[in-house]
Image 1 (tube, rainbow, N blue to C red):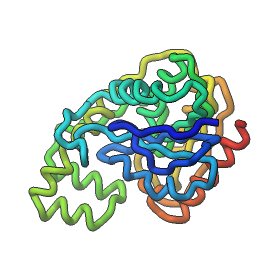
Image 2 (cartoon, rainbow, N blue to C red):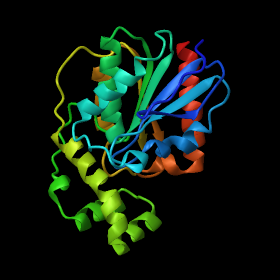
Image 3 (cartoon, helix red, strand yellow):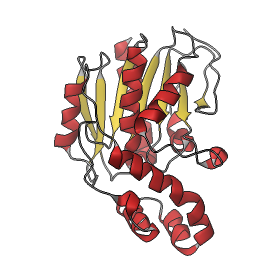
Length: 256
């Protein structure tokens, strides 16, 4: 049991627990912030603490330099996580771009001699997949069109199209993260010891079931695939949020 974990600029506490049996660290999707997991965090019951990573260059870290390398995001986050007690029962969750960062963080966590109880990756092909696009070099209008394809909030998209000042605040992080994803190159290494659960939605234009199945090669432990209804942003629906929290809780309980 580990109590009173503290957050940092990188690690934001979304759900605290006086004596957590599990600590879930969540990596946001591209263009996203720690707040992307606020609704999910509130779905967990007693015994689970939830932290989300706040990447630099957005929200209250807007003045900081954007980081266009997924591996650097992973390294910086793990450096913060390693300040927690060695007995902290860590699991990691990542969606979309965050899934790849989560994987790289999991590698570094285990390389530091720490135990990872589980890795949950959502809406993203396995890390050895090479992204063919170059959206980070496209115009703002093309980036907004891509966000619409992914099923992002229509109100947000409308604001991005109609308010240049708002777009100037939001789109640099989106462009940076597309660059990070599109220039990432997987480096072969030992598979994780931790089990991996992959999550995919039925109508995700970015990822196929066959692609998420390839995550199996990246663990020496158990592996499974769980499917949810919806598109790429399926995590945002209340019914899926509840189901994901239940899934994570069940997997972590089984691991203990």
